[in-house]
Length: 261
Image (cartoon, rainbow, N blue to C red; front, side):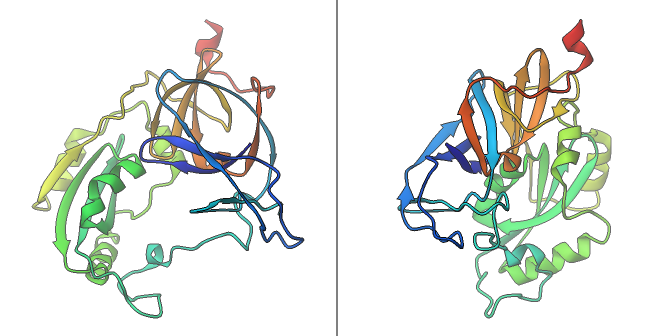
């Protein structure tokens, strides 16, 4: 099986049978079935990571494999979401973001605060996909262009991107409530949010790329596993493209001090 995608909202991996036919340039010919592996708290994973190559593409009819070495995706199957780079000047041939958009603040423990935009109806979903701890809905505007202009202005003082290592570093922390409330005092939010992902940690987890251990939970792209008395946080994107083999990992993993107690 190959990991061909992940679900950062509900927590899960998309797997496809290996060996789908491809042409010499990596162009797929026949689709294979895609299976969903939920990552529910308490589940036991027991997979070794094999080789890694392009994860191909997933369509309605199934998974189209690709044998190119680049991972998680090669140049033929890599997609670029131009809206993520938009600052109010449309990068598409024609602007098409005419839905109402929400401008929001998201807090990541302990003290990282991000400005972002999304379609208003996706606000709660988008925040959970990112693994936000707290959030505030600042404004609703009539289209994406206006929202991106506001985001760009606020990003002069606040970040508009929080990378996964930063989120992992705060998994065992709580949001600094004093700093968060001080920031909100500069605005007049329409609504505020606080999220619970169903688990808490006593110490910072180790960063690893593994698929073996007991599932503690998921938070955005981060999968938290306990393996040999050590807690690990895995970026699910880093699993995409890997072939999975049944059996405990044979890698030598870095252990926390608690594993030797």
